[in-house]
Length: 398
Image (cartoon, rainbow, N blue to C red; front, top):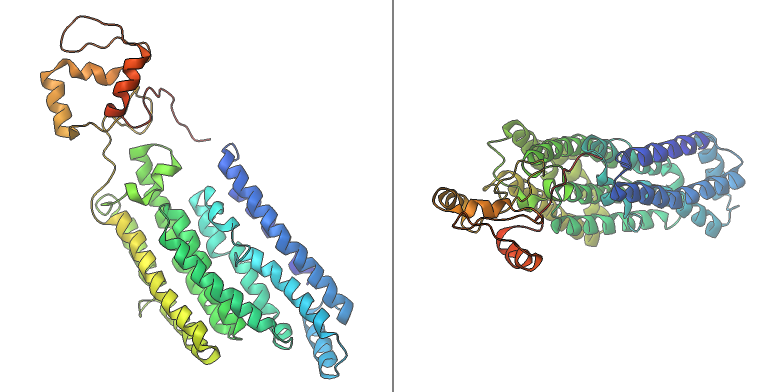
């Protein structure tokens, strides 16, 4: 248990450094602090739980701890209230690390790091640690009354909450983050039912598909940055995407494979693991089973929504005079569309109106030059551009 706690803390420190990779961005700095502080809440509970069980059994070794504790339970020599409290404190560490309700708030903000870091956190390291801890301590939790019911309750709440939150996301990475939260709820539900094999099986299958999805989303974001520049609010916005199949066909195929796997399409890996969890849920509680089955349908819905918004339809970003570097004085969506702006450029002197700078002198239908004051500029600005009027700053990576 001491070794687990030491490396548990090291995982938390590494995640703090990785999430805050772009530390010059205030959002990323706040996100890594939020993840660190939220995990400290669970880690404090984990430390208290470890010390509590050491006080009861006198051992940190798993095998000795399980054996001594079973002997104490069989002889009725323990205070069940104190033992249950220690077990809940141990579970609090897993709640924070695996982003279970109510300590799930750090997970969507952890998307401020680079995409490969998001794939690592969501597939292999951070979120897997809590599931592994509960599975490793399963012989301890089984003999403690009511703690297994509590674990499964937290799991089913997280399943439903993560799926419903994923339905409303516009950011592609945040949508996948809430998807991860929902799938971790399935694993915790399986652990609460005592089906730790299916939980670990789902952990492995979900890791493959979710890493594929995150890396695919990173490829999509990079391809969007050539259109909208480095701006996470635009490059990660699924509303501005669409029709990317012809631009990134390999990414589209891999993303489709990960989507089908996470939806539970039969030949793929996630079908077998999720099917085991759903079958076991009928034996455990029909109410939990109904919620889990309906959430599986929601999973298919929000994953197909992410895929269709990103790759199907037509591209929703059509910027006029937009080269992705934000160094033009005005980049706008023309009132008359692309063709209309071309006609106006050929036939009129209106083109100079699109090249105004601060204190500039626009020429309109004639060669005479007139002074334009601030009031006129403010009046015509809404008709010509999006709110980046007169923006001469170039946006660089932090």
